[in-house]
Length: 155
Image (cartoon, rainbow, N blue to C red; front, side):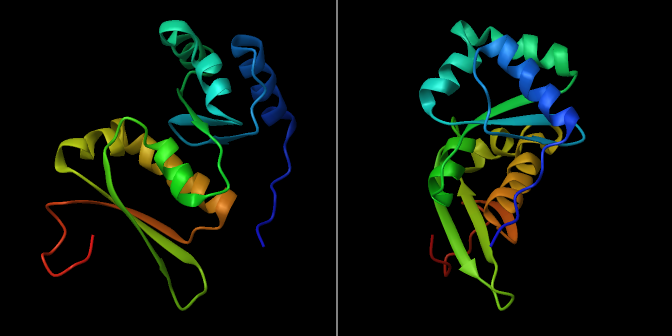
């Protein structure tokens, strides 16, 4: 069972500021060294939070002084990963349960999408790893490209 993190006063201030700018109250947020990830309930809220022509993203980046990502929530790990990596062509999502009882995930993408999946300075992939651990108890997450997969491996 995953323990829910308690929200601090600082978290609530972030939520409030996000709502003031976007009109959407997020379900969760994860703060990393270089970015803040907000989780919203559905695609309709995602579109509203981003704004017309993505007008809210620069405002959010300026206010929080960090790169802001907005992901759609899902209880299904595959769907959540697809939401988090929208704009990246996903070849496969491989799941493996290790002896420690935790699930480990390998995301396979085409070489051309590798940079987009990783994000500037690794911000996107680091954020997704943190979210998967915190919200779904995923023990590990790695990115591989189709070039890195051996012919004998299943995709």
